[in-house]
Image (cartoon, rainbow, N blue to C red; front, side, top):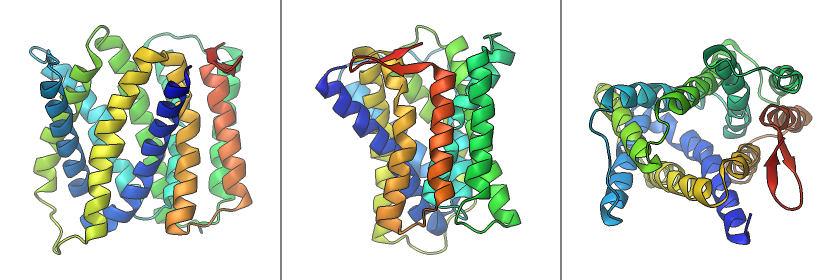
Length: 294
């Protein structure tokens, strides 16, 4: 991995980590459905304009059925679950919990695609479950029924990402990534915008909320997708997968720095255990300066 690719990887991790900060600020004012509707609508528009500006052909004809499924499973539902959860959870806790996506992807791939659950993957799954227990049971945030429900919502979002990721791998092999991104965000917008119109906020959002919505849609969604595609082609999928280890770290840092969120021993312990499970499940190992698959 070149120095430029490494910088892009860290930037991608920061943008996706910042999404939890943006959501935490904006969702109390807008509600989850409006926030997600605006997010996916703006992201689809920015990505489509980028495709036009760069002369990329979007081969969407005949794919809207599968795109609708992936738009719902991989975008609309998980975005909504995470946004709803952050009404009651800290951004840092949501970011760490969301890193269990790797765990759920391994389980879904084993059931759906027949991918073998090797002893190392099984150990990673069990370690990930233990990490969630440590994080939730030892977190500074007082547990209550609504907090537990919100935690379940984030884990449900991670499961949706697992289903969406496996479906995408199975259905969209060979489809240009930008086509998939535009189609997925557009399909999600088609679902979420009508829902959002039924739950509009009663007050005009503050400047801070508006800036967070723009940051979430443009930076953490559209620009992040473009960086992700660049890394896939430049550094390869294995090296790019290490962003999973970076996102929750930035989510934790941003939550502490900008929102003053509490961090206890359980937060750090849960983060370390869950990220260790990610390493086991993905088989990532670090050789001479270049992440590799084991």
